Image (cartoon, one colour):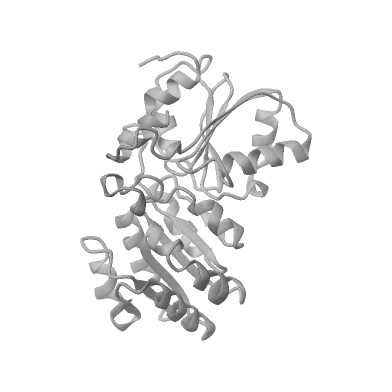
Length: 297
């Protein structure tokens, strides 16, 4: 998604109020942004706390500010500055964390972002998790409040047509329950079940914004008195599953079965690729098929 982000930022760069800050990251992806924006592209160096302070100062002057780094360096290291400098004054700063979940694989837990959505939502930021590259322009256009944008690696079945962007949208129809997936895992689920007949597969919903209030009436009607499978590359606490369970209780809906697959951390104490960690958590294609009770691969 870095290249899609770069293209979207370059289109926004025609607006001279747009600034882009990076913590000495983005090489082999953001060179075009740097060339297009000139002095409005600021490499703050490996000083993430200062980077947030600079972003807040620019935003106070009425400028639109995007801040980019590897996800844990974007939300965890400068947590206090995000809270005090951006959230308390409600400034329109968009924090862009690349490599959400296990995205930085072999680099290990210091480079993984497994609790980021919960942490940022707790501070009151909008939490955006694009499922596909095509989601990013619409998301950036609406960044007018404290926002956290979590980038990953987009997947979808070969030749598939991506539905028009919506914060919550159905990407695959089915008659055997509902899979609701946070961000790029929607593409994994789509690939897992696309070849199954509609009578044997679940429908798949892609969630690109964490707030359950944005789910349409169609979604709530579909999960009522049905089986629901929630998948997210995020810890159990404070993520999509927890938010959705609370919303279901408040609405008084009946879900016949609720299964939740989430990031388990490091069950074996070993680190590997993103695919390795997803498989350990049952979040790869085979794991999702098995969650439904059988494997059609």
